[in-house]
Image: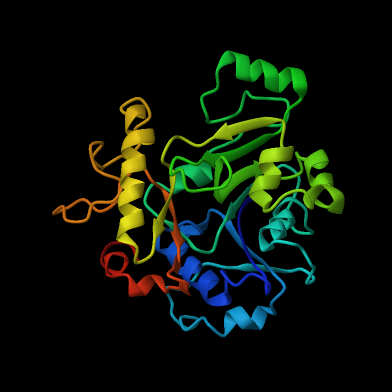
Length: 300
């Protein structure tokens, strides 16, 4: 069974470029999420309709002995969809992944932070069998998985109150091959045309076992927009803080920390959060994260 850590880069998506994928690869390496102690722990897969050379020419470290982690490129045809997010269906059906592979989608604008390893190594319930999951499930949940032969989709609920759906759709996990009926719907034009984005589709069509991440594990950051980030801090206090200490997982961090600390002498972001999506839209422009001084100081 492989661990497929997968991103999507398609020509019709203005929010994701080959440069963004390259930046993601650097940050995955920074956290040792592809190679760790000389061993490959996950397969980093780029699904794209760009030519492979468009990514390789960006790799200024190709002759650097520290650049040892591999990338697997999966070229897919350019296809017309009414929203670029629907290209994520390639994560559920492609020619590379194997049955029961642990499969993860990660947006190229996500910054992996400390404690991300625990997400990669977590095991989901098998279809119809909850016994081998690393997530603690209630007895009634286990029974429903067995009785209904349910497959599992592991997603983050939107604690930020900024999304159009109940999800933060920037990182999620499933066992490849367990969602045959859902995948068939992904390729039915009459069905997907009812939904604005792929997240809306999942919210409307997935009816098996939805396993949420622990609260606050996935987050977001508005590049160069402190007002919106201060609002995220308020949502953290409203929706995440009441879950502590029972759901606190930030090993080495401070449970009482704010989501984003602006002026503290040693806190930066809460150690509860393992994956942070950078929203780069500001005043009609698409901002480079390196233009945000806080990000350059503490996260990039």
